[in-house]
Image (cartoon, rainbow over all chains, first blue to last red):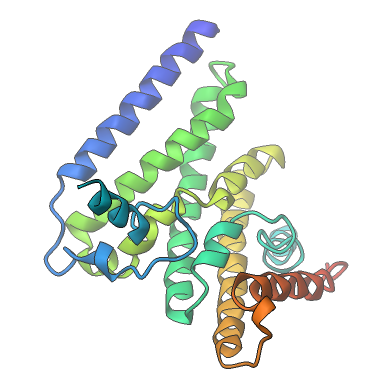
Length: 61
Length: 190
């Protein structure tokens, strides 16, 4: 059964990567380009849209 | 009758936020405005129902026949993350207006443990497909109800004379605690 579990895990990661890349390559519809900037930020810093991440990127530059 | 009991229990008595303390992060983070709370609540309903159907199917059609049920937790985590990506992609391509309304909340869903909690509870309680569907709709409806009530209270609190030491998250947590106490009064309803 261990081999099934390992194969299943590989398949899952593969599916995730595939869907992630497909999502990344899908163009954003017109009018939605600045959704990230419309986010004022909340206490959830794990969210990729939180402005704290953009501030970090700018400070690295 | 059993379906009705499952629904009332999930919405009021065993509310996912106030009784099981799941999904607290977005509950506190996105409840400052009622409009944001409504968007988040609707996105949670959509993702929980979809992810429950998918994870229920995967458990019974793949994990059980292969006898790898112990992989349920890791499977559900990856499936939910992939599902959120997929939903975002479909919305971008075919439902741009919905993407504009909910798109900002979708990344938050992956950090919402209520989604994983419901997927695991569907298996734990050994629900049939119909029961799972009712439970998976009722839980996020309870989430929407509570986050809307909480955001309405927080909007009022903005203009209330709150002592400095209690401003912000402190008073929000006290309000959440009082709401949990109030909701505990529903125990024994069904």
